[in-house]
Length: 97
Image (cartoon, rainbow, N blue to C red; front, side, top):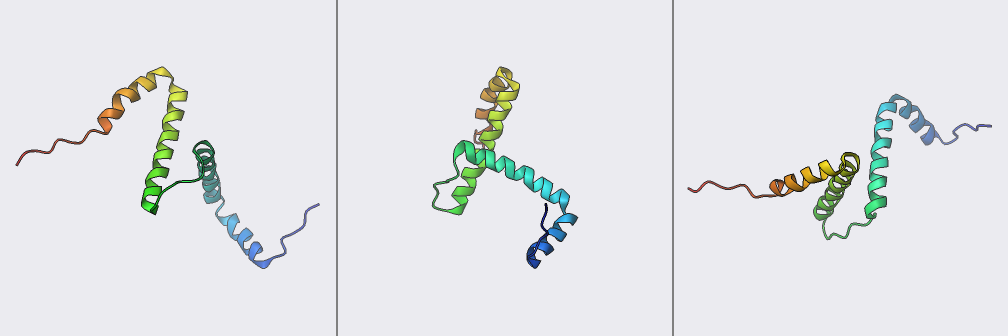
C-alpha cells in the first residue's frame, strides 16, 4: 500500500527531481564515495580554518584513491608509487638570475 505525498513542498521537489534524474544519480555515487572515506578516516577534521580542513579532506581523498590503486594493482603499482611520489613532492629548481 502506497500513500501519496501530502506536503506541497515535497510534491514540488518530487516533480523537479524527475527532470534531474541523471544529476541525482551522479550525486548519489559521489555521496557513496564521501561516505566510504568518512567511514575509513573519520568524519571529524581537526582544523582551525576552512582552508586547512579543505586541504585535509583532499588529502584523505588522494590517500583513499592510492590505497584503492595499490589494492587493485598489487606490488607493481606500490613500487611505481614508491619511486614516483618523492619526485612529485620535489621543489622545482629555480634558474639563477
